[in-house]
Length: 277
Image 1: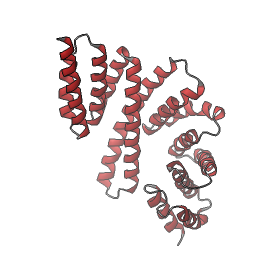
Image 2: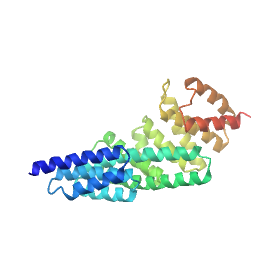
Image 3: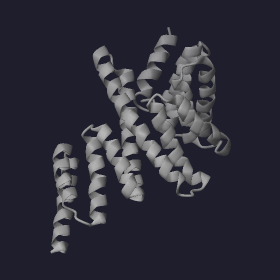
Image 4: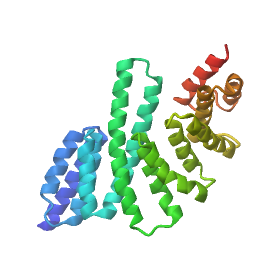
């Protein structure tokens, strides 16, 4: 019967989940493709299977296919696709952040180059997915506050893909509307910092300063430790206040001996060593 057929398909999707959980995306894709070919007119089942297919492609590092499938799903199941794209974006951007952190502390040149290439490929897919999601959000008649997370994830994805100017076009109008939003200040600071130009570095420093000032007691979030690391890096790049870095790092250790963990710890320690001679 149709009911038994649907139950069997749901069971096979659970097997696909299990394959994804044990890092076997290729095996998951085989199961999902069988289910998708066999769903008939059951749109709910097709949407579920399609969602899992996009996750599996991303897990299997098939980023172009992942983006292509997301676009196709958006055409047929826009609301379900938006949720899947959002979840994938969060995971992809986290992977890009982790890779960029690994690039900073990697000493072997070939390995550093490989990590950077992986990061760029992931970031390109993320920026494409982010644009799909932002276009969907614009059609939902959301308030400015409700739109903000979609705009931030889009800006971050553009920044990670090396499209800082495009990211700033999203961020600049938001800064006046949400002057006290730490995540927005972080994104604006990171985008300006990545442009590596003196006038942008100075503006970037102001955003990081705002983040530092907005948390007055521990435990401090990663945003706060990142802001201190960037502040010291900006001092280094501009040749200003560098003599203060060793003392400030010593004081920061009183809040957390580990300086928020890596990549913050290793970079702050490098700068403290450099200017503590």
